[in-house]
Image (cartoon, rainbow, N blue to C red; front, side):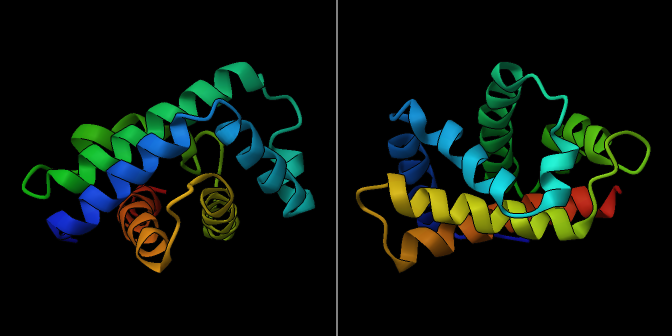
Length: 137
């Protein structure tokens, strides 16, 4: 999935603004965990210090994969796809829907320049990565 440069720039700028607030990732997990008992169950024994760092890295990797359409997304997302596959954490499609909805809600709260274009950029970049992860499930 090819994503235009303007969308990538919009996403990258918004990601920078959101990551500029240390509470961004923590708030995301508050929203995500409240989205479903199944989500809460999946994270019951999670080390959230490590998990927050992993999410920050994953968002960066999603952007790198989206910016480099000529390269195979595997270059950026292989480890993440393995970790989330049916062979390890068993993260199915329904959880990605909740994850993305929670992420978009968090961006809306934390990006002072949030707009429909910003939300669309996040959705496009994240869906490119999610599609790859699901293909490797």
